Length: 265
Image 1 (cartoon, rainbow, N blue to C red):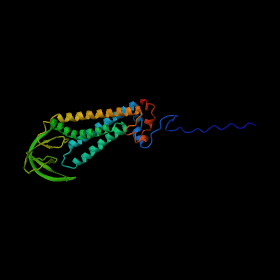
Image 2 (image 1 turned 60 degrees about the vertical axis):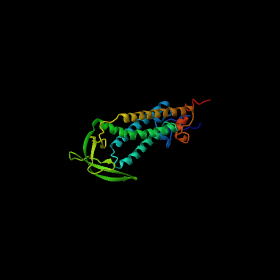
Image 3 (image 1 turned 90 degrees about the vertical axis):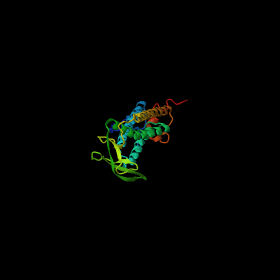
Image 4 (image 1 turned 30 degrees about the vertical axis):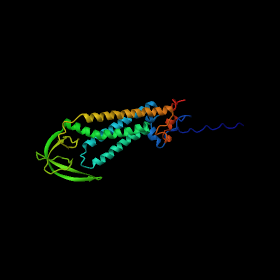
């Protein structure tokens, strides 16, 4: 009497993570998912340049937003202090993307950080000047009152200005050593984007916008150069400043087929 045939194995549910053939790079886990998530985090040349494009886009949007806020600030309130914190925070995002995502050198990372800070702060003044030159309204009046204010050991005077037509400027203007009744000239933006300022600001110089534009182009060049540096490290098989102390963050990068393909003999 022959033995019964063995029972067929029960079907197993497919692995939701997909096939994992031998030799395939390990999937990023934990904090590594931040830097190697999805196709844009793949260790390929195309993904590297996609990360560069996203970094430039994020930096451009952040720079435009912070510059608009800086132009809107009266500098007679808390934004003069809080705005600096916002600038540093936004610039730090670009710094982290440059070092951990683009694998740039330390010099490139610091250059990108300081260029972003400059573009955000100087961009606010450039935007304010451009708005005044385009649609600023010049009025004359007197200082009606002023208030001495202090924030973080910085003291200034915030002036209220009454115009010759009897109306008041809607926002305080930062001033130095004011005198009630003193005659002043004020430039205002009807839309309220740019904070009112003393003097006739309608004849702005294009020098500052040109400098800010040049600085931003230099920033883009630094980010492109950082991307090329990261790819050179990957193809040469040498750790980047981010990869060296944190190899566990980049499992797919280290396991990519062309990692070290251009290693010097």
